[in-house]
Image (cartoon, one colour):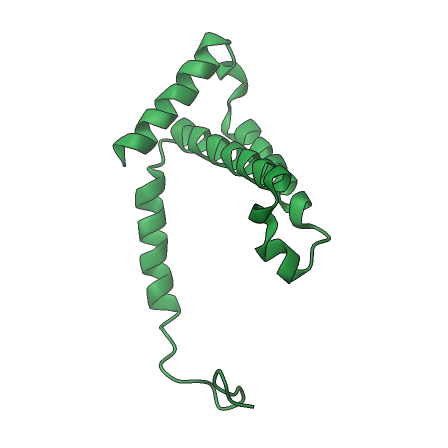
Length: 119
């Protein structure tokens, strides 16, 4: 695992320990908290058009909210991985490899769909 990611996990663990929160950081509770924080991220984009959502970071207030929610999601994910002994980067690399095997790259356009630029 990246030393930076591991250092962040340690900081999160130390933060929780200093407040005696480890007792609440069970896999079930962390998974639930992760879900809630992901929902709060979705809420920012809920009624935006695709075009508006692509420009959300241009609005400083919304950009700050997005960054805060991304940080919350990542914090809970890292704590969840720590609780279960999961190396997040190794798990991601393995998943990408499985997906590359399951979903080979498309070499040409499907016959029922025009290529980009064609109509």
